[in-house]
Image 1 (cartoon, helix red, strand yellow):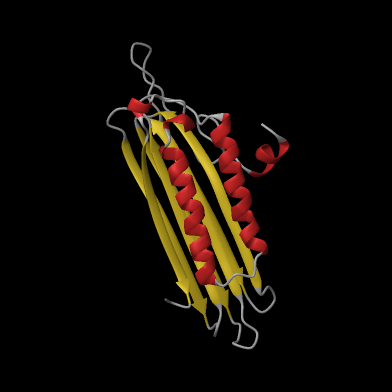
Image 2 (cartoon, rainbow, N blue to C red):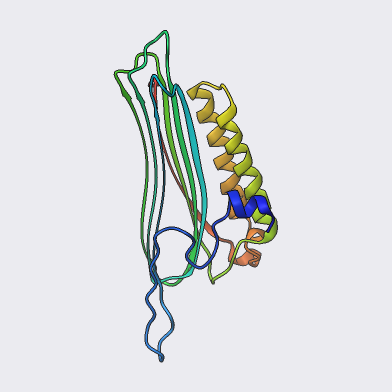
Length: 212
């Protein structure tokens, strides 16, 4: 893995850098894991910091688990700007979760919330995208899949330097999310046989001002 990936992108491992716990059954039983992982990004724009953009792009490869609780939140807020001196606050969070297991108890929360607080003419966008990938057996994303995800992450980062209005940012974020979903649904991404295609569920919540 190159320096860019290690610094900016994939937080990989059995339970990657977030809140996570594992419990192991007795010696005569198969090991079972209970995993908890949470990702969140928050922005606040005001008269001192007119433009705020932050994104999160995480990959949680949980392995074989008995139960998992995963959360993904994006919160954007614009405060106290005027129509002549408007603010823009954008928070985007992409969370990818992969796991395997039989009758896994999964609790997944995905939420995006945008708030304008006395902020006339401000643009505020919160987008939460959660991709839950279930494979028949424990596996990991291939190096090729990781490189493609890294490229998508770079393009997500690049949106922060753009001057696109919130409505256009929504379209760009949705386009990137569609690429992620297509990639994760490809058996080649996890080196599984075509007959054992991964199951991918996408949770999407976008909230923004001005309302459309």
